[in-house]
Amino acid sequence: MKYIISLALTFTLIFPAAIFADTPEPEPQPKAIGIQKDQPAPFSGVLLNPLAAAQIFTEKNYSDEECKLKIDFAVNKEAARLNLILESTRISMEAMDQKYNSIISIKDAEIDRLSKLALENSNDYSEWWAVGGILAGIALTLAVVYGVKNME
Image (cartoon, rainbow, N blue to C red):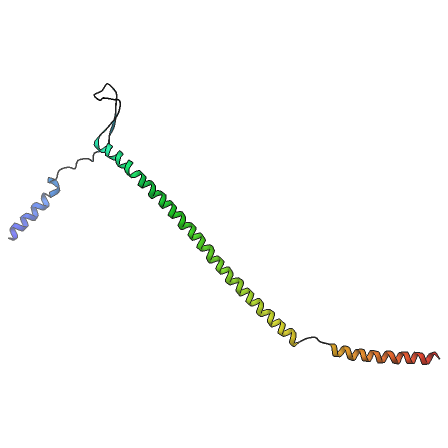
C-alpha cells in the first residue's frame, strides 16, 4: 500500500495536472468593422460582432442608472459637506454663547463685589463738613465782632 501511494505521489510531482490542461483561449474583444455599400451588405455602415453589439446595448441600458448613481453620490457628498459645516458652525455658536454667558456672570459678580465694597467704605464726610462749617461760622463771627470793635 505504501508502495502505491509513493508511486502516485511521485507521478504527481513529475507530471503535474497543469501540464495536461488546455491553454486558455484569449477573451473575445469587441470589434467593429466599417463596410462600404458594394461589399456584401445591403447598406454602408458599421458591422459589429455580437460582443460589441451587446456591449453597446448594455452601456445604453445602464448609462441612465450610472448617471443617476453619480448624481446621487455627488449630491450626498455635498449634503454631507454642508451638514458638517452647519454642525461645526452650530457648535461654534454654542461655545461662543457659553463664553458670553460666563463673561456676563463674571462681570455681574464683579459689579456686586464692587458695590458691596463701595457701600461698606462709603466716603461720607458729611459730619466733618458740618463740624467744619460750624467752626468756620464761629471763627467768622468772632473775626467780624473783633473787626467791628476795633473800628470804633
